[in-house]
Image 1 (tube, rainbow, N blue to C red):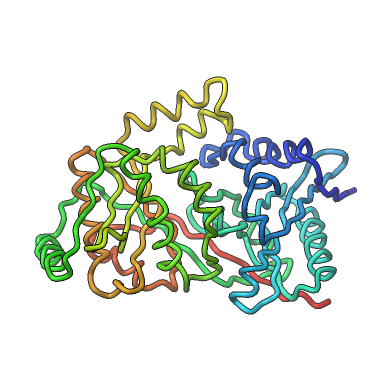
Image 2: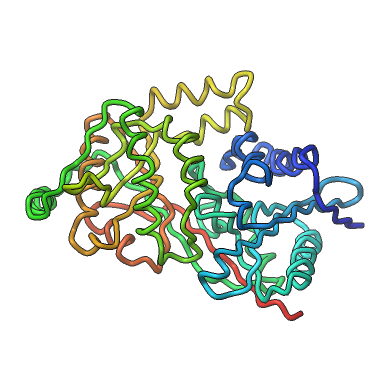
Length: 374
């Protein structure tokens, strides 16, 4: 017997967050997110995205045991921007039982109809900074900490429930020590001179923070036309600057500035923390933070988190500047392997940038969609 319960209180969220730890126990490819981050994202009184979002959380129980979970989210700003009436689903996990998956999605679809919505899409979060896409290729590879892991039966069940692929993301793996092509070096120098641009140099994370707001403002404009993206609010930007920029490794960041000291392009990478998060098991305390600090100090693998170019500077070759500068930093630091951030396959300009480097496909994930017949 399958029972669905709505999670309404913070103490209930603990079980919601804990469920994947049971489902993926012993799986060498699952990277548990930090429980504190998960809780802050899911709580209406902690996440500024609730200024324009509403959400419901559901858990499935089979024979008295937790068997699945799902979050249903309405991002009103996204619906207004993209002129649609969609509910997003995220934080979705379930045992290998299609009826459990069906019960969870039936609950989301029922809520969507009650709210007069017309479609359901996901996995997506509250914002573009949350987890996106269901893994469809690369089940035997270690993902980055910003990615979802799921079993191969997940997408099969979704298709059985009538969901169809809408957008795909791809991640690349490449040798981080390969030299920057000479042709690219020459071209980058010409671009910097022609447009009076400069590369920002940072000695520590404190020097990055003053550029935080400018960085996210440029990100808002660079990502504005990407699938599902909604510009971050000032309140959200303040939270991201406060909570995350202090962990930035200055050698792994590149910002290209114009004559007015505005950020026109950026690339942000970090040491791979996937194995450290596995050792931490989702907890910073009492010892989880030690594994993370060690991974930040000694590493030979990096993850590319964010990169983009202000629309006014796109198609002028500016992107190759931060790619090349970061590449040189990787060589200097002895980095062996890099994994790119998820990039929409439909974003051909971003994906084609990898043609300048030896690379191979690493992971592929998909966003699904279903029309709701109320």
